[in-house]
Image (cartoon, rainbow, N blue to C red; front, side, top):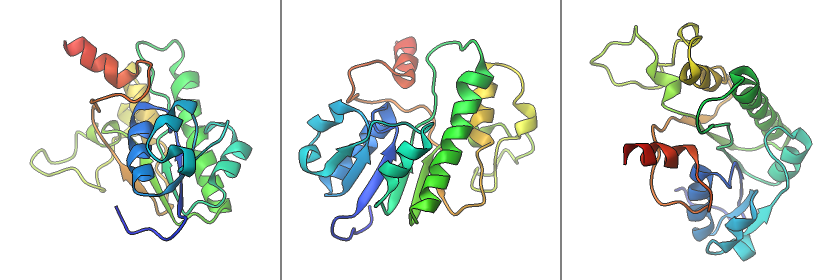
Length: 197
């Protein structure tokens, strides 16, 4: 983690989710001021002094603007990751993922944020049959969105891929994320682990 200036603020969308909460925890312990959501995060070390919670989500542009104002960086983790089958992938996955990302990026532009880290998914890079099998996938390899039109998991992958932008942001594409949970409710990653057991 880079050296921070005094009172540097980071906004974490989806801070109360599995990955988001695990990202907020080290930020607080390193002394960053964090803007996020979800009350249980107040139990984390340094949260009472350094965590400012906002009653908003990535679909609320004005709420995002309020949360991002004064921040030098944004960690965008919020995106729908349903547990089980969804009835309407277009409405439940595509629309909120795309609208949320557009809202976050517009709010970042408005607030003159220096750096945006977008937590995407391995799904954004792996569906590329033309990529050489012996070559490591990197920033030149993105999922072929034309091939993501069938099946539930493909719709989720498409909702991740369609968010590519020309703005200067860093995108992290983790695969299955498992480990200790900070929140008290189950999430998609936890259910995958439970299925393996």
